[in-house]
Image (cartoon, rainbow, N blue to C red):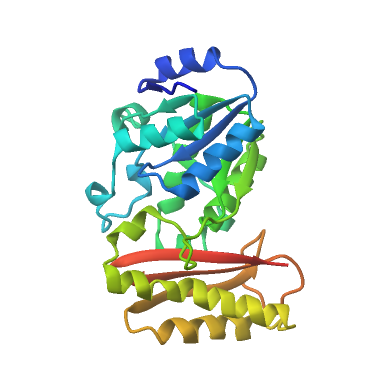
Length: 280
């Protein structure tokens, strides 16, 4: 059975990394792992000689109004799940390691971070791209694995890696869903039973738009309107945005002619959930 090694400091990480067979696959997470995360680890195991996972709840991607301290954490449970999934090394840096005193260097991706999540969560992607760059620099993987559920994040990281000539292959894996269709998320634990049932409106609205697309609908405004109508019919849901955009540029579409992304952000009670589907 694989024995998971756990380290905290960057020197310990680099020493352990140097002893691992190449190529190295990397899965960055914020912990409180679910099947979506573990599917990334298993895919990394299939495609890499060694697998490193990081757990770091990154404070710079949270807005001042977000409750950083309330983000769920269970390191002991996570480590057990990672060992079972086949990870070789778990790195758990502290905020002091990632952002030492007098830290003043940031990584920004401009265009892709402006719409959707970027518009609703100013500064979020600067925190994401900065911490992912630091994680990549520390781990030095050949491959990195991300989930499709954070579709805009995946697009931003792909752009960043291309722009900065990082020698890393970015592999985006499908969304893992509960049996009833709800996209797996650490934030699902915030939902009470009634909210958990109401949260199905996200996947239902996406499924309806996808069904219309398969029947020939190509007008983006029609698809957006269909999703919006379904979400607004749920009393516990508060819509933040729906989008039908180009898959690569994230520009809103009038007509769907190629690979496109349906996405949304919806509050269910006080919990903000996101979901998406790829068309074409």
